[in-house]
Image (cartoon, rainbow, N blue to C red; front, side, top):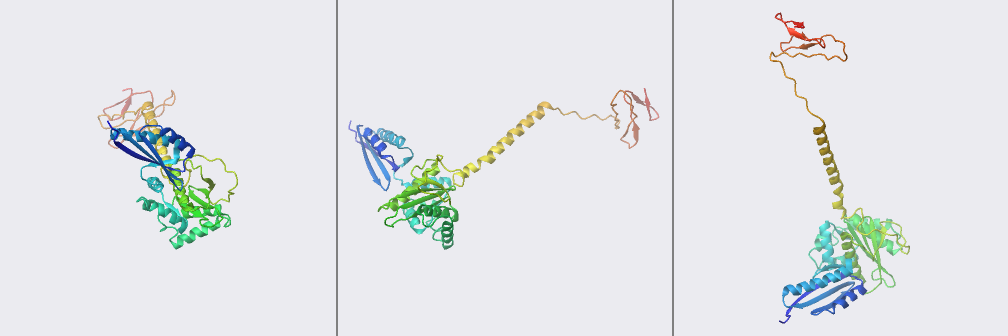
Length: 353
């Protein structure tokens, strides 16, 4: 029977380890009925897997198996499958986290807007400047705040300060800024602000530098929301006076602890834990009460309708008789401790009957 059923699957990656990718591709090329093709642009690399088999299920299973091999080898660089772009998958993470992205200026906004315009998800997570650089009042605040928190002659700080100001002034979880683009002889710096930190990267001045900056910013956002590492970025505290050339301090893997969108769910965890602890404490208290204490029965009232209270002696000595109010409203004497009294025909109590 001819293997006339063909299935194709695309594994999408951004800036993968090319040595690892080529090694896996070399291993897969030895398989029968499998063809591999690689396509790359501005850091994005697509791995196109084509498999032939007798039946659709067999062809699909073969492409899935090969795709998993690439994804396991490439790790976080493999961001999705199919036709979705970096912007598509980054927007999906932003929507799930209920987070927004703001650009610091029209040039940066144009770069991000170009990528987000290819997916319907873009309008849900990016304002296309409406609440940031296109609003004159917000734009003035971004410019003033950035100027206050950076050295205007130091491009890495300028990019970082603008990204942080864009996030704060636009009330977005992420701020993005690109500086130096199109200026001959100067490096390009791209910054992403998130959770009190700024992730900065330097690019060479190349014809596709703008697109590389936009895709790298979106991939950084995706990685941060997934709790993945960002090895290509240098991390600094927002609005800090940092030195780009200084050795970078060790950093923890995953999303930052404060200020980010990923914190919305974690912020609800503390009150839930407190509530659980209180419920457990209440349950223990109820159990202790019912296992260590009993409720005494109420005293019975004599048939005649009158009540008699007796004083209990604190020691072996006798105490004077006490009185209690009867049902008829008259005061009656009670017996001293240790003695009995009986009610006579004259209505008075007599000791010893």
